[in-house]
Length: 304
Image (cartoon, rainbow, N blue to C red; front, side):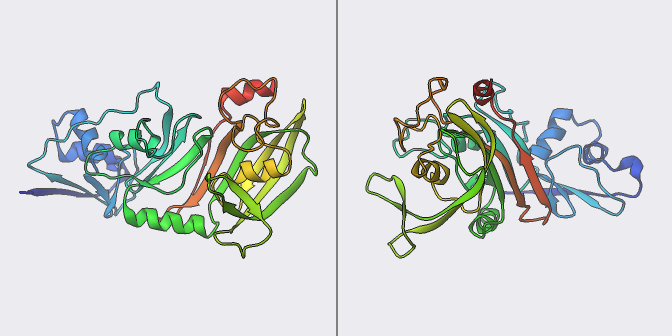
C-alpha cells in the first residue's frame, strides 16, 4: 500500500535556491546517489511541476516538494551507454528530445527482431514512466525527435505537429544540381500497396494528404547538391518523395529512384539526410524550445 511522504521547502533567499541543495537540506546525510534518484524518479516538484534537473534554480517564493513512497527503494537509474546509437539532448518531467544515429528504427518493427529507439528509451526511463511516440524519423535518417512521457503531453505535441507549428529543418545531400536555388514542393501524397508514398494531382484521391516541402541550396557539389530542407507538413518519406519526383533523390535512397540516388563518393549504407533543427512550444510551460544537432561525420566527410 502506498505511503506517500511529502517534504516541502519555500525559497526565502538566493543562498538556498538550487533544487539539489534544497533536497540535500531536506534530507541531511542522505547519499548523493539517493538525492539524484529522487530527481530521476520524478519525486521532486517545483510549484507542482515535476523537476528532473538537480541544477534547476528556484526564485524567491517558489516551493519545492519531495513526494516519496516510504515503501519504495529509489535507485539511481543507469544512463544510456555512451556508445549507444542515441543521446539525450533535453529531458524534463513531461518529455524528452533525443538525437538518434542513422540505422536505428524510431519505433518497434512488426517482426520485433530489431531493438528500436523507443525500446531503448523505455529501458532508460523509470518503470513508473511510459514513453509515447509523437513523430518519427526513417530508420536511415539521423537527427532529432521528441517523445512524450504521458498521453496528455503526447496529444498536445501531436496537435502542434498537425497544425504545422514545430520548426523542422533537415540537412540533405541530393543527386544532381537542384534548380532553382530556393523554392518549394507542394503535392498531395498517397500510399500504394507496397507502402510507397507518391504524389497525386490533388487531394480528391482517397488518403491523398497535403505535403509541402521548402528548400534552400547551401552548396553545389560534384553531381550533388547540399540543401537545407524545411518541412511545412510531415508526411511519411515526404522529403525523399518530393526530391525523387524532381529527379534529385536523396543520395543513398534505396526506395525512391534507387539507381539515380547512387553517388560514387557516398559509401555510407544510410541516407544522406539529417534532422538538424527541432523547435516547438512546451505543452505544459508554454516556453519556446529549440534544439540543433550537428551534422554527422558521415555527411561532413562527403562535403570534403
